[in-house]
Amino acid sequence: MTQVIIDGKPCAAEEGETLLVVARREGIDIPAFCFEESLASYGACRMCLVEVVKGARPGITTSCTLQAADGLEVLTETPEITGLRKALIELYLAQAPRAESIKALARRYGVEKTRFARKVVKEDPLQNRCILCGLCVRVCGEIMGAGAINYIGRGQFTEINTPFYEENEACMGCGACAEVCPTGAIALEDRTDTRVMKSWSETKVPLARCAACGTFFAPVPFTRYAHEKLDPGILDALKDLCPACRSKAAARKAILLKKEGVIPPEPELQA
Image (cartoon, rainbow, N blue to C red; front, side, top):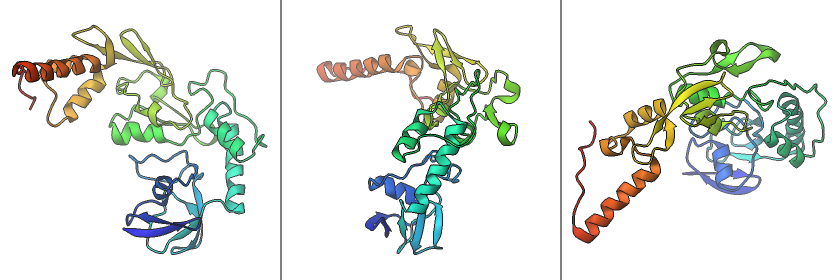
């Protein structure tokens, strides 16, 4: 353990831990759009800027890439940082004019309008909310291993979607992309037995059906992926059950065991 000082407050940190993580744990609110703890930090959005005053190279840097070290001291809301954030917010308002999280941050910093031309596309699959932070691309490729989406185009024409804007069978329909998106840009919809990834070229993924109650509950490719990752594996008797029915099966087992000392027969765990 080591100690860093954030806005004059001593904060305990682990050696090598990023300053943004330390700050959030201590209740110090540093805005960030491209940060996700399950992914390596890369400082793309620039919103988490802090000023280093001691213990490292002085100056302004991103707190998500700044590693905690003994004697490190930073400030998070200097006039210069506030000015930089306001300029960034104006850019994001132009890039993603319908992103509520951007509008909320704008209100926090008193930004009422943007000097830059707004980019509003009527048929935008990302609902005019995408800021190209790349979290969806990274979680799909680096964590899920699917790589179903990526950047398309360059400069002001850069977008994120499936290759050639076509349905992509590599998509597992897991929704991890939507989960990490900081602006709510990614839309998906469950239609009876199919999950439609509306933002990703209407890619359609079949949903698994519960063997007990008949409810469609999860994308088939994702359930297979999850079962392969479990160690020990899931019981064969539970594989085709929705979460609610699995809970009922577990409760039934516990009740029988407590009342009658009987353990319902089950198949052995998967290898």
